[in-house]
Image (cartoon, rainbow, N blue to C red; front, side, top):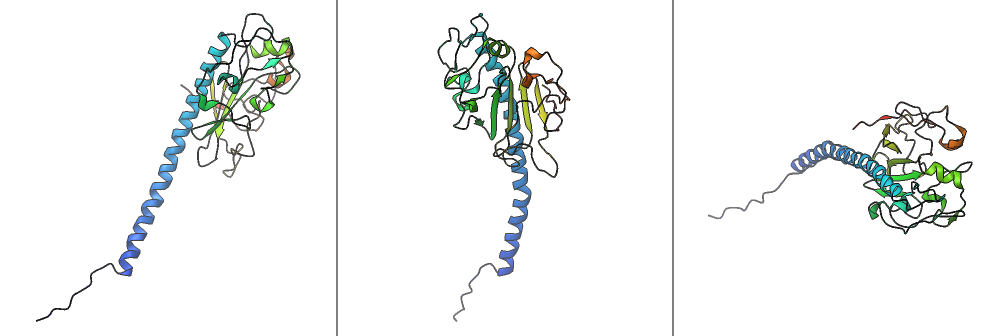
Length: 244
């Protein structure tokens, strides 16, 4: 007796059920994975800002830059912290040799912004009566300066971190000042639209300061604002202490 050979396989309905199950699992797992990645990147951004504060302290204490030759060093840009260059001011004192105070991964890119673990970083330095100094200011070239600039840069700097790709590599934005205080803001201007989207919009030097500056004129107009927890910045979002 010859038995007919039966071909076994999945029916179309069975395949559709399997595909549906995979789709459901993916719909649950992918957002969870993305949220975990965002949380990790935001934690890394805070750690990097804390590191920048520590690097600034080392850079300043080394007096690698001492434009007014008074023995007190100034804070540096990210390019200077990473050892890429040192600014040369018109009335510079005896500057040191470029050397790295932070990892090479924080060296600014061609647009003057440093990027690491899904976040972008920038440091602003005060300049009396002029625009704040950043790596985007072409500070690798000879920059105009004066004694007042050096005095301000001995005691003031602001650093910011914001997601390189909003809603993908991160959501919130962060800030740090010379006192080491880390501030955090939602970066949501309403309707899940970011203040800083990582491409066309970046933090201003006074993004995390009060809207009603009240400081001595000699501090410099662009650094008059009070950089403390709970102040409302120029972008109208609330900055609060990140804690820790």
